[in-house]
Length: 293
Ligand code: UTP
Image (cartoon, rainbow, N blue to C red; front, side):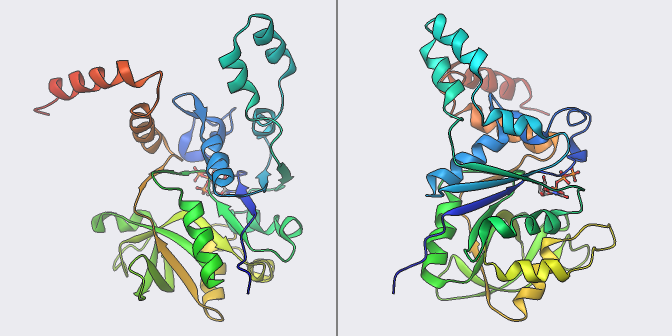
């Protein structure tokens, strides 16, 4: 039997980004850069490197810059060409001509509602869902869960271990071990558990979903916040079919607020060929200065 390779990806990007105000008043949060690259470009690159052939970005009001970023910029290209700035020209053109499609969520009614807008794009195919607030550093997490899906053909939720004292900030997975130390059965999910967390594995913004999720989302009522939650749909799905969690071993950053973005920016600066040579000594100096704080 041939294994199913997931070839489609969905990136919801219609949220209001209120945790990042005032930066997000006039700019889509997905366009805010980690050093010099918009956060959403990291996500798109991860998907393409994982073998994805078509990407659907779910946009909304005020998100035009995302489409512009993945389009050609004729004036800029002409200018860079005329000045012989080949390296910059490559940077300006490498994000156009990708197989990216767009649809709009008319009201920001939650992640579950945004995912519902991907129904026609996916048809009967399973798909990779990537949340733009979650940036990884290390092995390609999307590729890892695509490979797991090819083996098991079951819905996969990527997870990372977090500090047990901080579980109340995350969507936490209730899990049971399997023979594979990195793979677990998900028996429940709890959004920001305030008292007892069933584990310290947080959902990390990468999923492989099957079309069955759309029927559940279509019938799901909005929660108390007025938003349709993907977590609620997954909990319902779990009652009729097994869900798997995959534990990611690499680093995970939440860039949906200023603190997470700053942390990611510092770490990615250490990898950046044009920045690291000056930035590393600067960081070391800072560390010395604040050694006693
Ligand atoms: P978040 O809740 O983290 O994003 O949703 P947000 O709503 O933009 O953030 P805050 O809380 O106001 O700061 C997770 C992902 O789902 C998308 C977001 O763009 C983000 O990538 N999303 C969320 C939608 O596409 N539509 C929505 O209605 C809500």
